[in-house]
Length: 379
Image (cartoon, rainbow, N blue to C red; front, top):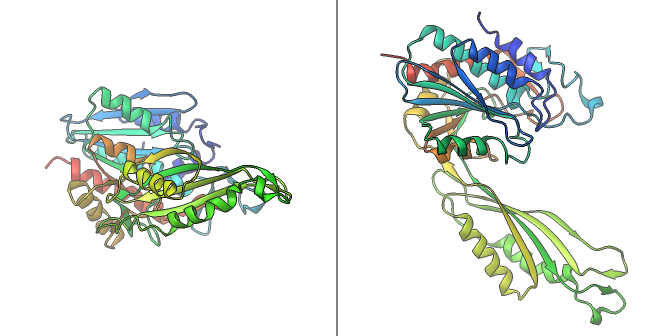
């Protein structure tokens, strides 16, 4: 059987797998991988479905891992879609549906490329593995991170990993992500004393107290970045305070986020924030959530293979960048593996009428096949 990448992508899109639900997507992938000689293990945690599958070739090493997620974000207002979001539709050369670009199209391309590769090279070097989760779009606490932790306890080797995130900007292959910035969120509550607006001398306005400190944080220069990462960014995302126009607020809640380079550390940023807040003699409460540490895959075997694959199949030179948000690649990087993200154009991800070009999805199969061939084909 030869897997049709478009039909497989449509089959995946038709399953309403809004995070953390999988809706049978993983079962479909597992069945196809089992037919190719993979051994799979269900690794569910709490409300999240995950699986690990591996196929050994002539040798155990190196271990190449395809990674991705079957969950998608909600469709939004259904009336705004010109095709049903969970009924994959081909129109004007595009495949439409929630998850077409992020990232069910990539998953279909991975499975199709793997089938072609193991057919052509049944005694390939090393092992091919899959690490698939259903919570990448959600809280990301019971998915890839938990599976990686468990596999590391078993001393499972990871050498290379291709994550199918939609990395491309204008055309397929123009950008390969070879790292991501770290993400650190702060939850700040500035405390004052509530009172009547007519009696300010009996209160302490938490909003007023916050201005100078928040401005200092916003204007702080955190680092200069480096050749791989832009400077660290600090952004205030949420502010809440007040109950009525005649009440002086006694609390102000602020949520902020760092996207930080390898020039900074989470602990270092935390200390600098508290030092700034303390310099304004504030009464406050501050909690943190480390969403992910920065990682970088420098020039090496995987990045070279990925660039060659794009050159051979897309006739362009891929640019290696670390821009954008976080991905599950940050968890896989902890294994010591070389990690890159290669996937469709990201112009419509999480949007109404999400779509991917039919021709580019077919080419993505060729790209993944070429990466496998460069790294695992026996000479």
